[in-house]
Length: 130
Image 1 (cartoon, one colour):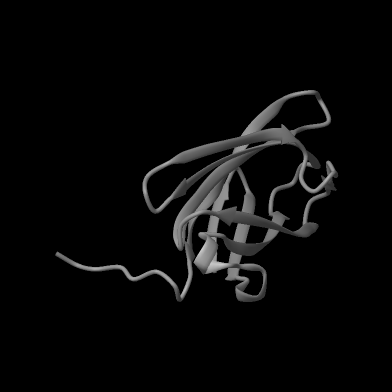
Image 2: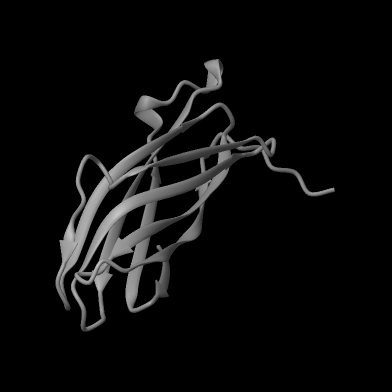
């Protein structure tokens, strides 16, 4: 489990390799990741945008930007949390993801919340130390 708190918003991520959806012989590796977003502050916020940076084992980067998460823009009152599950395919047996969520406040202000960097590891990675 990876966890980070920014501006009283705690983001926890739990990645899982999906062997049954992967095809290592075709360089296709798939992970699911479960995210929990918890409002530990005293102000209602709405998640309006996401930004991901995905880096595979070879250092190739891919950015994903868009509205909300999994088709939703959840509103979190103080003490509430929101869970969702999504996925990530890569052409390499490992990688890393990191990102941020833009949160909007009732007065129209906004701020960005960090998503902790998390490792995408599979049993198919034959990592070697020099």
